[in-house]
Length: 252
Length: 202
Image (cartoon, rainbow over all chains, first blue to last red; front, side, top):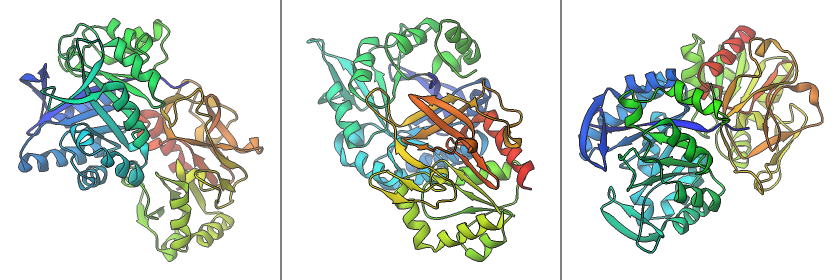
């Protein structure tokens, strides 16, 4: 059977890896290419890079990092952040990205999902969504790092994104992100049950048990995290050994 | 010289990079004269079968590939490139492939499975082969595909993987080799397979 995947995420700004807590308060960590190679060696199944830069100068630096990463590692990697058009897709795919994830632009222009899927195949198009629970117990989709409510229901948006051609979903829970108190199991499970593509849980990992919970109870196909890996709190190999012992199929 | 056939689909740079890293002399081209001189022809591929075979026809490569296969040149199909080696595919219709190997490409039944079959899956040995001499049943490789090979010719299948059905993962008949997964994205195991391939074809 397919293994569950463990995916370190690297937020990159101005050529350096950073990690935000609840999307503010950013701390500098490391060189992205070096860190990518380290993770690939350590047993990561895949990597995700988020470009959180703003200026076009920095975007060139980021593109160069994508190329160097593609030259260096031999596991798949996804690029997210700052993708607004098919032209952005083209640039990143040509630079060597295996998949490209889109968030806010997909909300503004859902056809972008479709066009990208037609050009590159669904397997290259990842729909990334930031969600938050409302007071009615439903989950809403937010954009702009969790600051702007879109009016979309998370489950409906996930289904629509997949119907348009998204081949994978990264589900980031705003409330649990950076809090290290566990992934948002309920919505991860609901989305996973609602769509026929893999769901990557994001936001909330603090210990090994959190990974186990979201990959079993939460029905996630993969679990993504940044800080627990960057700061050496959890070693990927040890995490996978732990998961295997608990009966979760992982690549060791 | 090893040729990677550039027939205008998908991201083939990663395959080129992986082979170059192992010290292979690689040329990316669709020039028929060049392909005719190659020791090994790599057919990569990401995307849809219809576009892929359509482009092979458009660039006049179908006869070239068949001729070289017959001549004994190594032909290595990766992912969609492997599917192209077969008689027929049912991806979004019904399309004839190169017919170098016997079998048909059919869709996964997605009633119980997530499709595409995407991620790391374990290899299961069916028979010995030089290409895979140091691979074991504990090795994982990276797959991304929605269609798989169905064939009565079991002899060609070296390794399978399990995803609802037995998915042929590595196939070989004489000089024709196919890999359904992406060796260039399969970490150390992928490198091992490509290194064996190098030994075999160089």
